[in-house]
Amino acid sequence: MGLEEYKGVFVFAQQVDNILNGVAFELLGKGKELAGNLNTEVTAVLLGSGIKDLADKLAEYGADKVIVVDDPELKEYKTEPYAHALASVINEYKPEIVLVGATAIGRDLGPTVSARVKTGLTADCTVLEIGDFPLVAKEGEEQLHNQLLMTRPAFGGNTIATIACPYNRPQMATVRPGVMQKIAPIAGAKANVIEFNPGFTPDNRYVEILNVVKAVKNTANIMEAKILVSGGRGVGSKENFKLLDDLAEVLGGTVSCSRAVVENGWQPQDLQVGQTGKTVRPQIYFAIGISGAIQHVAGMEEADLIVAINKDEDAPIFDVADYGLVGDLNKIVPALTAALKSEMGK
Image (tube, rainbow, N blue to C red):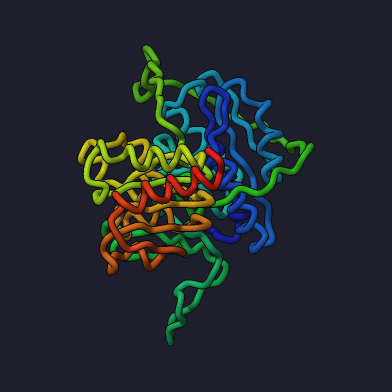
């Protein structure tokens, strides 16, 4: 493989029902940064049917080019035609880096495509940067420059691994939604569109979708919340979450929770923050009755302001908190809610 042939940063721009997933904009933001370090361009890859009008939106969020594969076979997500389309784009245009959102679709598509183009993939990355590999030069071993260094939690979040793919291209990574930051949109940006279609020949690997049933969810989208009031095992019971509901209502925030709360059946999984839940980046994050295990911290440590309330003064959550209150949450939270109500005239 001639690695020098591979240039550019490509981002898979996921859409469903002609609505772009927010992780596409986040990956374009990171892709723009990586492309700048490599003195190259960032290109969005848009797959679907009747989706060409979405290209300008991708340009607004940093795409220098948009490769569009528009075909009826791509109307709904199916592994085989989508993998064929993306792998064909990679083989045709030879990008150096390919980024995919770690959504349900991305976690299926990314590994399938990486196998087809004979390269590696690092899943659920939390940090992406351009650097040298090995990280520390070793005598007698060549240190390669301008490599994509992909960092992700490993062994259940108990350690952090930085991985490179120095001898194959493209370098591929999936990134969880909410981890990277999108750029401020460029008003009036128009996409430089490249239309490409490798052709589709359905075979016995093409599944047939008989029906699509869409679930209606009443839970809030914690990834969009500016203020999160998050509870852990220390809250004590499902009924006790009323204390957090009251605080969130006063602040105009949203309630979220830790994995232990979901496992106990106190809150739905859609509200879970952490490595096995969602990654959030609110302006204010209240961690109430949460010990601060690394798996939870990985999902909220980028919050602008973290306030921890816990009766255990040695709880790890205080290591990442900007403000910490040691004491009984059953006393502190109602008092805080009452004080805020009085201050805000509610």
